Image (cartoon, rainbow, N blue to C red; front, side, top):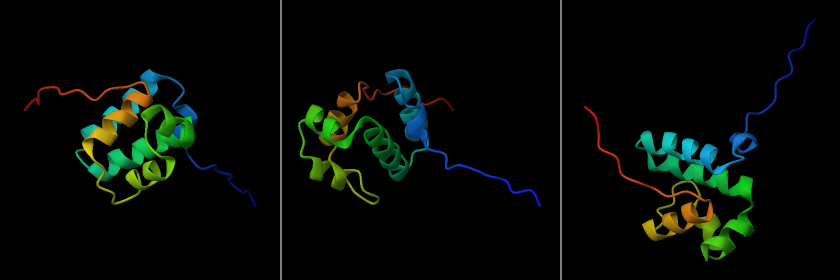
Length: 97
């Protein structure tokens, strides 16, 4: 009997540069789903270290956990601070139809 061994995929294993983080977050933004964006942000923050990102963003660690929790509705200001702490910024591009 052959057993197949699999491992859990973790995007954080591949988020080792600002370019990778930006590409990952752009895909989440493109989904149009705020829960997907929050989940992606949470994954990047965990990969970088919750305490470090909270400090760099100027927010309390506990507040950051709550802001990125499933179903949370964080303020846009918080999202901007977190993005800046991650070395990326959110930008607008025209929609192509």
